[in-house]
Image (cartoon, rainbow, N blue to C red; front, side, top):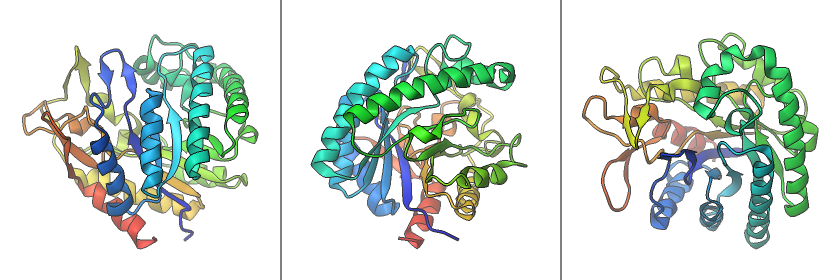
Length: 333
């Protein structure tokens, strides 16, 4: 079974998913540096995919990661923007990434994530959440959505090449069909669910067989019964209004669900010959843990650690999946 070239973890440096939902509400460089050190030393990862909406955060976290010896993929995430705004934002991000690459080396650029859902105007729906819910019923218009996506990715690849001299890729959803000839690496966001489990391993092998390096930039699961069967939408148990979150009071924690799911997908990806993997995610700071029924927002998160509520420096507790990843990466480092 082939080892992964990139043994990675996704790191959320702060994404504006909606007007009242910033995934990392407080930016504390000491917290970020500690997290990245844990990714390198405790998990045994050699790479990190850093995503953020704020490009200052993206660049600062990238510099920290390189100083710790992690190879870095930078991914700007700008939600609900029209294609021209996505391109303009990527142009600035590519310039920041090139400065970082020139200073440190070991920096690559991921130009976006599932843009048919995260950008505005490629598929019907007023926002990311609604487009995601509509996706199972949008099969008839996927050819048109993918045509729009390829046009946008063409513009993104051009501006990235103009400003950045390193490796570039894209994080494609399972329903997206990019033109991979314009990228250096095939980049996939892959979630095995009850609906696609019968074909999942075969689909992965088919992607690898095309010849270019393949990286799974995103895969993961929540830690409650039933999450594995709906992994890509398992966060849907979260209800967020006015800056406050709730999950169903009946929802129970089962960290073995998340750990087992990751172990099984590691095996599938390794057997298929995937070149790199990035577990989603190290932490999701806004989704804090609680013993109060309905308030354990970590159940709707994909983090390898559960963030504890409170002010001041961030505190977290490793979940069972943390040790699963550490054993997998440490065993092959």
